[in-house]
Image 1 (cartoon, rainbow, N blue to C red):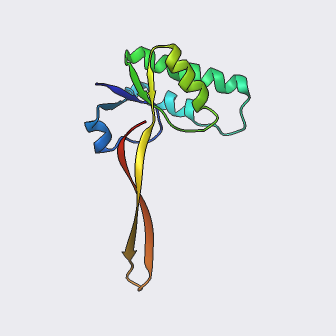
Image 2 (cartoon, helix red, strand yellow):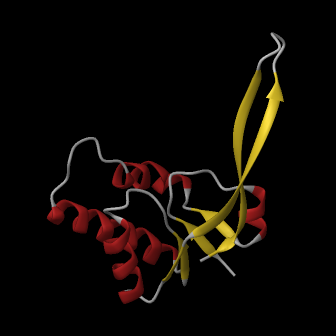
Length: 119
């Protein structure tokens, strides 16, 4: 099973083991640009970016894609992927809190997210 990573996040080893792959290197920059919003977009701009992201997925011939990012982009991307015959998947992660003693005697609290499947 091949699941195309349409997020800006690097794949974890668990996601790779679950069948995730990154977009080709030649499309990484384009995908990052499409997922990054430096100023408030219009509805038309969000829709256009979602369509361009779907075009990347279609160019790879996948039937599933992991998505995630700006909450205002996801409904459009989800809908357009479905219309293109690509199943949108969302990564589910379990948050684990860890306490790390520091050399000065303080304790640093860190949240670690562990991939645990798809929704």
